[in-house]
Each structure stands twice: as C-alpha cells, then as structure tokens.
Image (cartoon, rainbow, N blue to C red; front, side, top):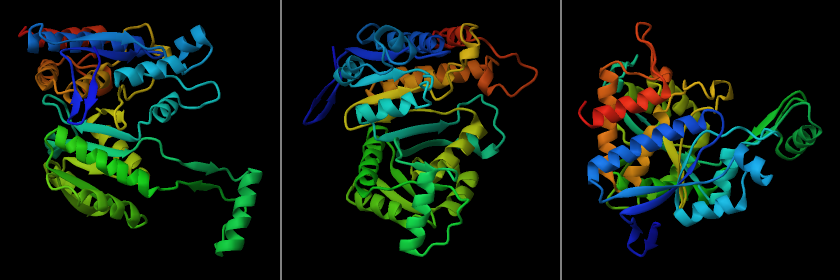
Length: 369
C-alpha cells in the first residue's frame, strides 16, 4: 500500500511500500545493512502491526545496463507513486554529470536536509558537540555556473560585464555565478517550517551573511507568517561563536548555498556523521551521504552508518518514531561497546568492523543482547 495525501496531510498505511535504489559501488552492501536494521526495529516496535514492503527501483549503472539509460522514466514514475525512496550511493555518469542532482530535479526535490547529530558513545574533538543536534536546510539543486578563464564564453561575459557595469575583471579571470530566486528561497523556508512542525522543533535560525542580505529577508517573509514555529536571524560570525559554545541553542538552520557547504563540511568533519534527505512538496528521497567507492565494493568494508541513520530519518518522516528511537539507542550501545565502523573510527586501538557485522551488532543490541 502507498502513502496518500489528503487535505489534512500525509496518510501512512500500516503496511507501506517504499522504494529503494541499490546504487553503485558499495551501494548494495550498505542498502542491505540499512534494510535489515530498519525491518528489525519496526518488528520490535510494532510487533507485526506495521511493516515495510521494499520495492527495488533501478537507477544508475544497473539501470543503464538493462535499459540503456541511467534514470529511466519508469523509475521516476515509481518513486512518484510511492512518494518515498531510500537512495544508496550512485556513480557519476561518464560525462561527469551527477545522477543525484538529475534525480532531484526530475522529482522536484528542491530542499536538501542534512542532519549533524552527536550520538552517545562517539569520540569528538570539540567537547561541546556532545550537545549537537542540528538540521541544515538549503537549496538541493543550486543553479550555479562556472565560466573557466580559458573559455571563449568567459571572454564574452567579462567584456559584457566590464562594458555594462563598469567592473574591472582581468582577462585571466574565471567567473562563478549562483543566481538566487526569491520564489525558491521562500519555498525552502516553508519546507523548514514543515520540517520543524513534524519533528517537534521550536525555532529556525536564519543565517545572514554580509554579502547576501536578500536570502535572510526572503526567509523572514515566510517564517514571520507562522505562529507555531519561532525564528531568529543570526550573522554568520556570531553563529559560529555560539555554535561552538552552546550548540544546543540551535535546532534548524536555514542557509544559502554559498555558506552551507562550508558549514556542512566543517560539522561533518568534526563529528564524522552526516545524513539526510532531499524533499519536495510530496516526494522525499532519503540518502546515503557518502561516495560510491567502487574499489571497495564486494569486500564488506563499507560504512553503512549514514544510510542507516537516513533510514531513521525516513521513519521519523512517516511518523514511526518508536522504531527510529530503537535504532538510535542500539547504535549508541554499539559505540559504547567499541563496535565502530571505519569512517568514524578515530581510535588506533580499535579495529573497525565490517559492514555486515555493524548492522548485526545494532540488531543484537535492539534485542537486548
């Protein structure tokens, strides 16, 4: 059975069909780990009264080998029918185009959600980050353009800007452009409000940079119209100071794409865990935030943690909170017992465990072993 949308919102059946994209490289290994953990948590939480029927969707190399295209139209329609999919790692296309970006555009997934959260038992270099539980929301498909200095089109653009706007751009320059839309910014701000309501968040923080006041102003226009979710506007430098001193002050962050990548890279590099989703008005794809690593495929050496946590986020999205909480508690218990996958293992005295072993250790701790 499928999710339905009514005037009152999303209706989730007790037996729910959800799509999954096995992906490329290590994708099938971490997908198997994620599905095993999610299924076990649902069974434990609901004793058979709820379940997921997993439906495989072909996108990526496997789709190309079978249908001659990396993103078949039938696969897009299947996701649109189910509204929710779990997406594992995908290779770049031969022409270097990003399949993740193509998928987001085809499905209208305009908001990118990244969660950076401390889980008890982790080793962290910033002591205060044991209170970190942050969701960053940004544009999922930034319309950026790079004009390299050796390109003829760049020469034309430099001449046009110099002639019409009086800017002194030297001929050996490259140009990076990122247009910003008021319409898209307000849609992302509205998505942040919906996310906050769904997840019990009380406040949205809008980051304001010196170079980009319009983004904050457009977000304020949307956030100020809501009565049940508060907001604040914080300048970037002040935010970083407060984040390090008191990370618990922040719940949901709205940020433009120029700032967001630096912020996400910093936080992900500090706690070594990043997971999340891309969401539109109805469809949502929950993602493994890691590379496909073809050279590691087949060795059971992949780290499934990001995809498992994205599975938790999917469960929260559909309202199956109890199952998500079971998974998080079991992961924390595994960390405390030094059962740590390679990507977050910072201790030389502990050998990282294999992909299948880590999912098994989580399931054991769900059941009290």
